Amino acid sequence: MKNRVLCALFLGLSGVFFALVASAQQSGQALLESKCGSCHTRTDDGLERIKDSRRTPEGWDMNIVRMMLIHGVKVTGEERAALVKYLADTRGLAPAETADRRYLLERRSNMVEDQPDETLAVMCARCHTYGRFALQRRTEGEWLKLSHFHMGQFPTIEYQNLGRDRNWWEIAKNDVPPLLAQNYPLETQAWSEWQSHAAHDLSGAWRLTGSQPGRGVYHGAMTFNKSGDDTYSISLNMQYADGSSVKGSGSAIVYTGYEVRGSVELDGQTVHQVYALTPDGDSMSGRWYLRDNDVIGGDLSAVRNDAQAHVLAVQPRYLKTGETAHIAIHGTGLAGNVSFGDGVEIMEIVAASADTITVKAHVGDGAVPGQRSASVGSVRMDDAFVVYSTIDSIRVEPENAIARVGGDGPLAPVPAQFDAVAYLNGADGKAGTNDDVRVGVMPATWSVENNSEAAAALEDTKFAGSIDASTGLFVAAGAGPNSQRPFSTNNAGDLSVKAVVTSGGSAFEGSAHLVVTVQRWNDPPLR
Ligand code: HEC
Ligand code: HEC
Image (cartoon, rainbow, N blue to C red; front, side, top):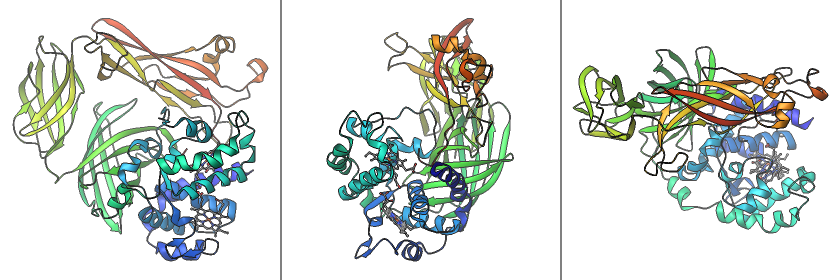
């Protein structure tokens, strides 16, 4: 029952979080006093409990939803948005404190996350991600209270797997709080310095580039118009290398001086955006995804049109020796001579503007394979593209993926999107080692196979879903139970995804592991 309420609230939540961004204008301080002060006692430096932690906007929103659910706190959507804004601004995380955990904010599926502390990994990251607590900062006492909250709310925590094989509560009470306070303390230099950061107005035109798994690279433009304190109306367009394009408009808000969250309607679909602004306020990067299917999305980086000149991207990302091709250099303030280094001859400038220079280039047979820089006038981008003569191996990304059955109830199936990425062996001549050179995403033919004897016996390839042979998009099957399967089991499966890339007359193969599992009923903003 509780899970269903939680699930419904969080579904509503992502709507509130992104849709009401423009109304987060009420006085957060006054709201905090009136909505939270009845239980959280006032002290000289703030309300008890609330003053002793710092969180991301998503982290604060989850906290408020929990107050609503467990403690019956009543706030409207607008009040909630205003509270999140105030709390994230006054008790947020500095850019350096979120840098290595942005995947969680960006809702990147299929990340195998870094879990640096073994005790914390086994004690605290079996139900949710390690990132959920690594994106909070607390005093030691406040970390201890979090252990108490878990024990009180979820008492079976002691008896479950990885609980019953140790004295879970003793460790959670004695060892975990000091460890967390040491790794994620309330007071840090990064935060005290960030609190005096310069506030930036994002208004104006931005140039963007990026890539979408399954669809390819794109470039485009984004415009911000100020609509209130830290809120904007935005419009954007993206032109894909395959010739297609999308455009749309919506709104955005900035939390903590750098956490940009936007929501736009793109071709009839609602798209959420999660970007981090750089401290100079001139560029931002992150990920956008479909609100209703966050597996589908893309990486994006943007830079202000009036910032100093930049080379943002060279498209395509790779060139073969002996080839003559059109190459686009995207950026801002582009002017001057184009150079791709030795062995790549610029034959003709096809078109040139401050945003994009398109050239016809020839890659000599003797051009040295590897990463290349691209320069225009005095600006330069390292590792802008790769020259290759023959590729050496294919890796499928992501290497480990999860898809989820669905569709027979309230939750749609969750797909998985794969890309086939070509690599060169690098100096050691061996595939699969650290010095391999990433060439880029190549067209592939996709298929799935059963990944184990058990999967073969249950005919998982037949029941768990299917992969599009040309785009690498795996769509999971209906949830089941399915009477055609032994024991009328559901449509889960254990599959191996195979990509075949043909290059230079040879076929290269890569594979990944795909687990097709059951629905995720509780899907909060920070998993
Ligand atoms: C009806 C009483 C009540 C109200 C009103 C209330 N809280 Fe709480 N809050 C609690 C209780 C009880 C706890 C401790 C148990 C827990 O963590 O759920 C708590 C814990 C917390 C914590 C620490 C939780 C953690 O992650 O460890 C924060 C932060 C917090 N509240 C924020 C708020 C905010 C913000 C508001 C106003 C929107 C609010 N509370 C309103 C009762 C309340
Ligand atoms: C038995 C599963 C389980 C274990 C083990 C577990 N958690 Fe949680 N944790 C939860 C659930 C469930 C929630 C609250 C529901 C939600 O928001 O998804 C939660 C919430 C949280 C939150 C967000 C609280 C808030 O309101 O902001 C943090 C931070 C957290 N856990 C950290 C930890 C730490 C640290 C440990 C190790 C001591 C831990 N968790 C162990 C299940 C678990």
